[in-house]
Image 1 (cartoon, helix red, strand yellow):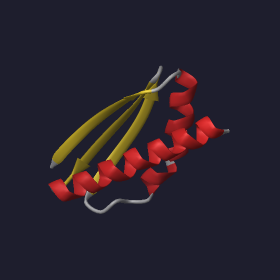
Image 2 (tube, rainbow, N blue to C red):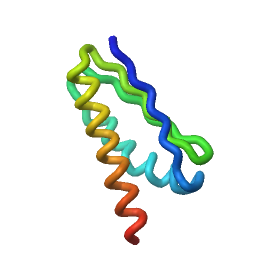
Image 3 (cartoon, rainbow, N blue to C red):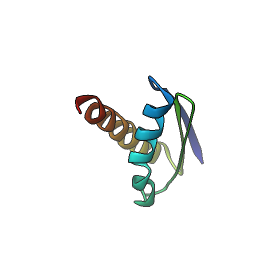
Length: 78
């Protein structure tokens, strides 16, 4: 298994919770060959991804980082 641990700093604890909760449902949609865990604490979002191979890890990282970026842009535009 290959693992990536990503920490994303947000502007506030509220922002981290809002973004973390908004992408949590995506975890229920299984990305092939990957296990994902997302948590948030204080002003940080913690994303742990374990995959069977490098291409699956890259795909999962790209998907979750894109979803976080999109959710943050939507939050900022409201």
